[in-house]
Length: 331
Image (cartoon, rainbow, N blue to C red; front, side):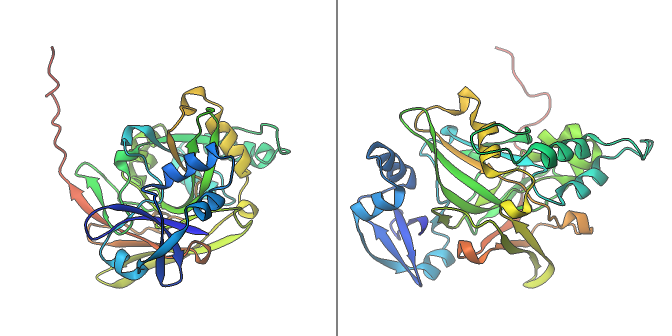
């Protein structure tokens, strides 16, 4: 089952089940989060909760997409209660580009960079037996729900940005139940938009490079994730494909198990506040930046994976920074 959240022509919110060319509207449901919390309280799966609500015929999916009325498939009415985070160096092959970015010219060839050392830890201990903790992955904070743009919308890139780089990834979508435990709603395609030029200057700038807008969706896939996933990441400029490349995901293509990545995120008590939403990017090994491509305003990113339905598309626009240095006021 694949879910979307969308607005009708009057701006009212709905949850929909993708049914071919049409959307079936879930009765009496304004958000995926509310449905998920109801499922937890009723001790049933999200799919069973949806079946209990029932559905009615809705609009054409293509029309809703074209009119940019599709919302992220999971959100919170208060963006401060949605945490967006991610893990890096999780995929086989993901260390190569990062290592080149982070190597210092004077570094001895025989000495491992911090990047390669962390990747090696993941290879050696990132897939422990179920129920046990393995090696810690790299972890980063992306922002709260206010930095998520809906599918089809442009990324507002700050005017101080030095790069506009896509990162085609899978995201895990979670809700914290009344019992303070995390529940996985499903998975979605994601574009973890980042500034790779800033990161390349020094790996300690990674935190700065991640503080950019992002997008995920348009659909949430419920149930288990296939072990092997192969999709396409593209950049279009003036309607033509500027760059495209296959990207791989799923546990067969990762050095960390999903269970291990989830454990090392939710082991922190501050991430277990009942009712909160978490969106977690699982990482990638494929970047246009690694191929010397520099995206620019007006370009469109397209990330597609058959198992996730419609592609995720987003553009780029420059957003003038309103804050000026030296304008913090003392009280």
